[in-house]
Image (cartoon, rainbow, N blue to C red; front, side, top):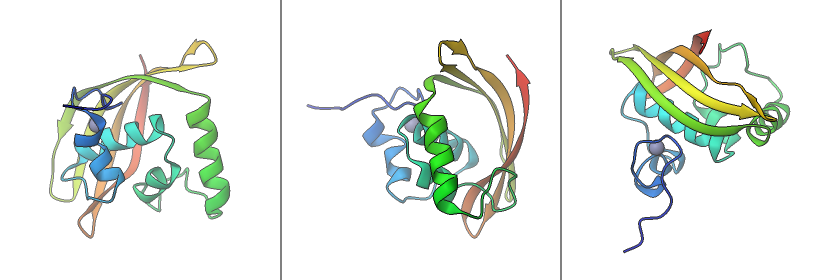
Length: 136
Ligand SMILES: [Zn+2]
């Protein structure tokens, strides 16, 4: 039996049974699942998914979608997404928080960080609103 490659979000599950489901269009059931699927989307270089799951009021949003996609893709291509660790998940009906450590390498330099991300639910879809970053 072929299980395929492991999911970049480090869930221990194959990608096809983990974040790919959301990348293919299913709505993430909670903010933690969304967070994981966004990390995997960066690792898999899927800028459309990042844009679709970013809240319109987020500071990184660009009106020019083509430029925005290129900016995200540039970040993806210059980064090695080594590990994701979820430290805390504070669930809620409309607002949820996920604290995580992302282990990243950029051009041979450690670009890891820990962030407490805020997610808002909009019409049944969890969206990344913003986050507070602390160096690891
Ligand atoms: Zn995953």
